[in-house]
Image 1 (cartoon, one colour):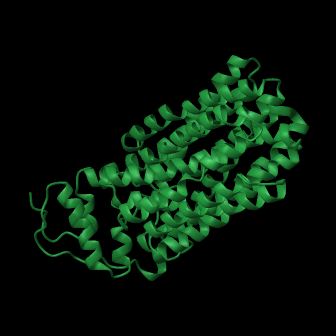
Image 2 (cartoon, helix red, strand yellow):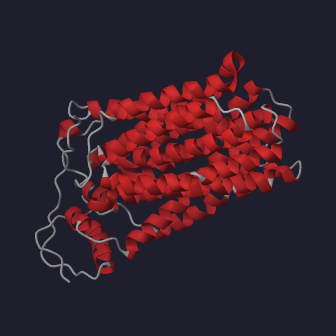
Image 3 (cartoon, helix red, strand yellow):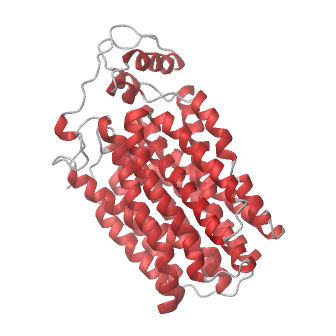
Amino acid sequence: MPTSPGLTASQRLDDLPFTGKHRKLLLGSGVGWALDAMDVGLVAYIMVALTVQWGLTPGQLSLIPAVGFAGMAIGASLGGLLADRIGRRQVFALTLLVYGLATGAAALSWSVAALLVFRFVIGLGLGAELPVASTLVSEFAPKRIRGRVVVVLEAFWAVGWTLAALIGYLLVPASDDGWRWALAVGAAPAVYAVVVRRGLPESVRFLLSRGRTEEAERVVREFEASAGRERTGEVLVEEAPPAERARIWAPGLRGRTAALWAVWFFVNFSYYGAFTWIPSLLVADGFSVIRSLEFTLIITLAQLPGYALAAWLIEAWGRRSTLATFLVGSAVAALAYANAGTGGQILAAGMLLSFFNLGAWGALYAVTPEVYPTAVRGRGAGSAAGFGRIASILAPLSVPLLLSTGGSALVFVVFGVAFVLAAAASLALPEMRGAALDEEPVPAR
């Protein structure tokens, strides 16, 4: 069937059904996302192994994730800026290459200092990839299901984290070099970078913002052909956003930027503080290494239904309601974990925390690129992620102090409070359900 004449390229994309081209983009980006999660998730298992092999103290252990998150904070901000200048696909492929090669090199670490250097470089690539990938997928997804598509993309995180749990369970305890083999497997993203560079399209909205209208038209036609549509009429080139809205702290954007940064900060603090330390905390509480890894694997699997429910609710309820609900659920689960006494209670509370927290992550990644115009979407998403990574640096470092003050219970009470603060900030975000990306969002009430 022919497309409607007189529509802009972005409107034509929004008018499409979900096609095979969308599916290929989602899968291609999702594999990169899963590899990212696998790399981040492996840190928790490596920490358990190095506690035994290198005799590291809690303070030394906390530096391993903290240094990686410092790299992620810088990488997220730089990646967003580069994505607005050279393109989403280019930066996506580059980040996969950087952290894949660095992960492989980290397998050869000969000291804590060497491992920390490699983790920092890994973090640069990891931090840049996530906001860029979600921006790319968001800019192609039809508006009526855009939130759901991005939540499905985020669900690949659970796939990668589950892979990390399996690798950690099967490889890390297998030998003294098990953690090295685990990192060697983590070099896979370097190979996958070639697939991304050659197989995924560049964002039409980015191409139009750079005046590359012929390339944009070619990509739109490919997606229309996948839907069985042929083009009729001329394409209207979209106008660049007004100059005063081309900064994330401009008067029209500063409120949503502040709210978004707050949500990212508190969600990062709680998530990375909890899930980076859970395997080590279980060992400290008397569980064997094997038993703690089994618990962590089961807890990780609870992420998948959390994503599934969030993917449905985000279009049924809207972004704001879904995000706030899952954050409140995360707070309740964290408090339940703080009061858990038996192995069964710990497992149940951990699964609830995994379910709600990762559902919240899915909603947050759907919301983030939507609240900015095309000209600053990459840097807006990247800067929010970068600011959030500051919390992911502080969280692992704060756990030893909290443990010495009030034990595991205090650790999870603090995380619960952080989730409540994130939920409160999420209510100030604009609602974009059913709106085109460059439309004015529905004001928060």
